[in-house]
Length: 489
Image 1: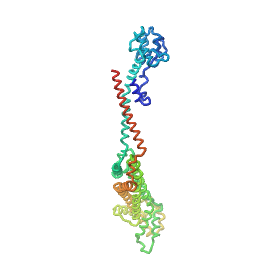
Image 2 (image 1 turned 135 degrees about the horizontal axis):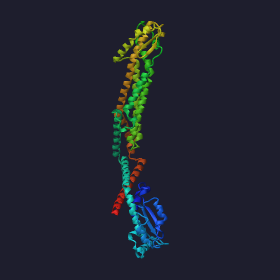
Image 3 (image 1 turned 135 degrees about the vertical axis):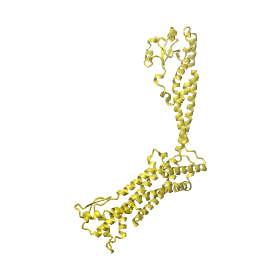
Image 4 (image 1 turned 120 degrees about the vertical axis):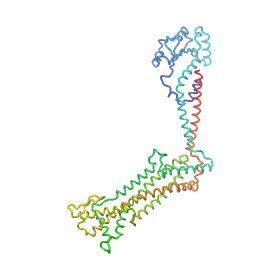
């Protein structure tokens, strides 16, 4: 009975039922000694679930009331009871358990007929031992799987317990732990933001920073290129600029201010795109830093608000500097037209090569012209324009078209370089300094690390309890298995 008690203690909520199949369980058939076993209704019922009788154990009651012929019934086994018979005496009236067992023992020892039945087939103690023995054999088949489940749960609980932060008890311990957190944060940001590694967040594509930032830079480049729109009224815009900047000068001389005026207008039209890019990419970087920060401070949530405040502060300061640089870049493009890129002259000369076709188009019936990069343009409205204005407008347009390609490419390159520069500066130097200053100097965060959050304390206690119970269960199960082996032997 001790074996069964140990098993019941170990198997929470009847866990063992999960592993014992219905067709493996024992069938206990209670028979009265006074009836014919071959016609007994309970035999027929047991056969409905155990047609061979191999899993049936018969308990014969009221042996003291009908002892005649009982020996033949239980020894011949005419109804094929696979696990045999156990004959018992029922308790009478108010007999205690002990009194009933004494009376039962005396009955099977002294009765002229019942004493002939083998001792291995009589008595409640024999029945109890037989039930334990049979059930032990059945249970022993599923015990290895149960032990395996216990080990899995135990190992998982130990892993979770080891993941919990060490309970800090002194300022030096807290200082060491804090510096480890800051170092881990810096190292992770260097890997994913500077080196482009993403193995730590392989399944989270938002943390694949190199790829995401390249996508945003490509998107900016496309937006800048799509901002180049060609008017259906060819050269009209250029002629208006020439008219607005007209002054006292030689008629065939195109002053530098005309080109700068045109350039300034075009730069103003796209000035929102670079600033919008900074806001977008920096918002993405702040989200990345937040996620890494949460992962690194997960064990010490009392540090998270302080470190997040410091991180947001340094990111905001850097963003302001980045925007200032971008605005300066835009302003520089407005006031100076310069490039050492030889593609400018090549592109300009190629576009100017269409000048003869342009002049001839105005005498054509359709007054149309095909220019590379512009498509088909209508020149009918230019027939009445003076040749000098027309030539200057054409030269201005082609020069601006060639130079604008340089400007857009330079903007994208400059933004990419500035982005990498500020990222390096934040990750390698400024973030660490800001966090240390906020936690150690401004807010007294080191002392806060000594106060373990209630949620962590509760989780630690639950895991410790789980580990202790699982270890005890494992020991009990191993002892049960040993006892079963000893019993079977």
